[in-house]
Structure formats: structure tokens, C-alpha cells
Image 1 (tube, rainbow, N blue to C red):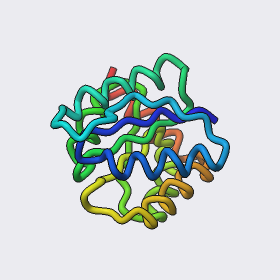
Image 2: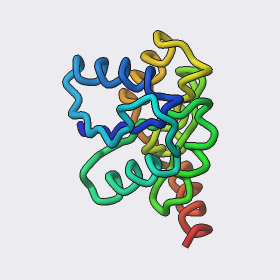
Image 3: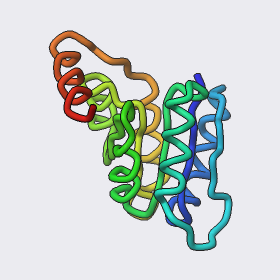
Image 4: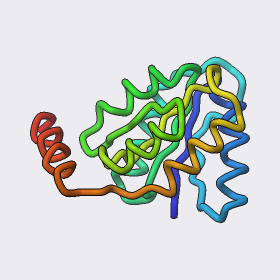
Length: 145
């Protein structure tokens, strides 16, 4: 599995922890930045993450900013991206199972490292259920075309 990971300065500390966790579990990580604590703009990393997934270079994405809100808004602008801001494992599981989310968004300033690890694990382990949920995904795709 290939996961693109990006963060702004507000998500950097959590990104470092989660990249280490991904690499330990054998996941191929594509790091699109930032790697600095200097102030930067989350839409830039949302774009890099979206482009990496949409090009087929990554299977899933993990994006982190201070709260996760800005990153979610920015990355969901891209057709083909279904990003979910999750605050617990249940939300992460349902995002994959029912919404076929391909990007997990986390808030680096609002969630602890251990919980973030569990949320990421739940997101990566789950798969899309299809069925009635596919009909809903098709409606979302149609509304953004």
C-alpha cells in the first residue's frame, strides 16, 4: 500500500509520528511536505496530496493541519477525492466502509499521538462496503461533475 502524507506547520509533529508508524508497518510513504515548522499554507499540501492520489501514485492519503478543518475543505475540492476528518476510530472506519474515503484528515493540534495512531490504523484496515453506499458515492460524483 502507498500512502501520500502531507501537513502544514500545524500538523508537522503529528505527521512525523504517523510517518514513523506507517513505515514500521511496512506501508510505502510518499512525503509531500512540509518538513519545517515555518508557517506555510495547507492548501498547497492538500493539492500535492490530491494530485498524488489522482495520478495513481498513491492508494490513500493522510493530510494534517492544525484542526484538520482547512485541509479537509481544501482537498475535497478535487474531483475524485473523498476526504474525511476523523476524531475517533469509528469515524475513520465508517469513512472507508460507507463513504469510500481515500484521504484521512487529522488535526495535529486537537488530537493526541496515540489516538491518532489508532484512527490511522482503523482507516487503513477498513475497506469500502459498496452496495447501497455505492449509489450514494455515485450521486456525489455526479454532483461535482
